Amino acid sequence: MRVLAIGVLVVLGAGGPVVAQGYVPVDFNKLSNYEYELPDPFAPAAPKPLNIIPDAVKSLNGKMVALEGFMLPLDLTPQGVSVFMLNASLDMCYFGAPVRMNEWVLVTMKGGKRAAFTHLATTVKGRLSVGEETRNGRVTSLYRLEADATEVEGRR
Image (cartoon, rainbow, N blue to C red; front, top):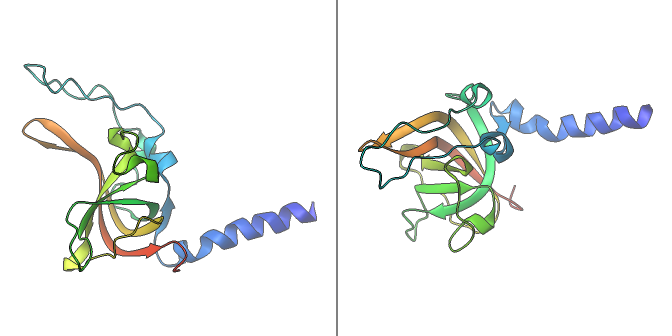
């Protein structure tokens, strides 16, 4: 019984610093643990998406979160990136496995900041927006995060 109590303290202690800074730890298992299928983009009339975002995921809308993943930069410059996709797995970046709509987050650095580009796991902290964003009648993202900061694995 005593060993179990120590184990619980270690787990709680490991998550403590992120929560203490005001960011709720979230992972891609929670964000992508449901089916979300988009209609055929070549259909003459695009119907609404076939699935709904679960309430447990919707409850994260507007929350300050810390989410770990891998960068796919959308505006790489020598100064870093200000907009990137954050994926659950390095294999989902570049030439790897295709991602489902609920397996990535569109990250925009707050206030003109730029994050250093890396292929290593990166924790992004900021305000999460949950919900279908559409352009020209098509869903373009489910998750967006306005990032305050990033921390690269091994440099924390």
